[in-house]
Image (cartoon, rainbow, N blue to C red; front, side, top):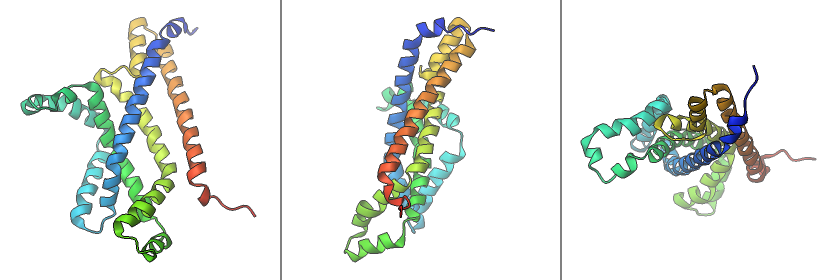
Length: 232
């Protein structure tokens, strides 16, 4: 069996636009997810049950349910309520792009919060005592020492979350968005070339994964240099 890539070549603009949409979904989801993850992580490390329990419940529910279910609930489920359709949020909630970004951001915020909370708990007592010795308030201690240190140390684990989110964005094609996977589905249904169509999509995901891995390696080399063993 010979593979026919002539039609794929002719449809490269469709794949290119799909890749741009995939990157848009990924970057927006990660940005808003991280904004949510920071306060959630701070609540998760709190000793007060009134603060810790709601954050724990949120991360438990989100991490314990499939991403596809969450996407369907937001995109299809909310539309069944008249109050939602009549609200000021309906222009946004009727948008597939907005709903996909919202679902992805909520999902990654739960995983990122747990990663960051674990990194905060692993902060050495020496860093905390040094900040207290300088007379820092609790807020200043978190802002200048604990959070920056935790964010640096969580980079290797967070890079895995980013790569997982890149693969997760492929679910956007189910809610009518023409991302990379959506482009492959379009080409496959239009020309009956499923193998070539999805192999092309897989190659594009591999290229994006390679770029993201290299970027995180550079970031780790810069931000985590102080953790590397010293050469004698």
